[in-house]
Length: 160
Image (tube, rainbow, N blue to C red):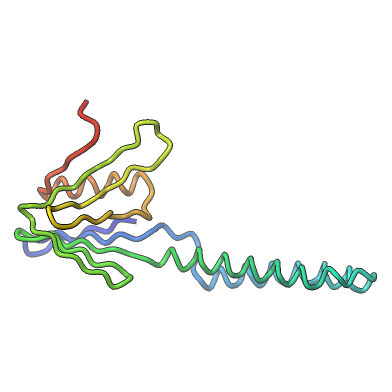
């Protein structure tokens, strides 16, 4: 998701992944799966196949762990603040980079075979940073257009 704000000759882009469920909804889904799997496992244990209980527990545990990791990944974000002198990038993991505006280009790498998503890389002589690696293709295109409108120099791997 791309949110754009303009104020005092500055453009701010706030980038975050699309999220289909909140953590609360994900916990509810995990509880429903755990109840369903536990019911089946207990029924088999009553019949005499008690060996299934530890495997059902491992299954619920792995499902909860994977859903937690996916949900956690959807809460990352990046903020780009474009001013006349600099481009500042702030990330949810605490990384903050400042690129000089006159020396920075946005490299837009499109996969010519259409098997991978395009990449957006801010690059100066001293540093580079991939912007919005967690975004989908249409959101990356929107970031590309917004940075182009803000006057950032755009380079691409397609010349035609």
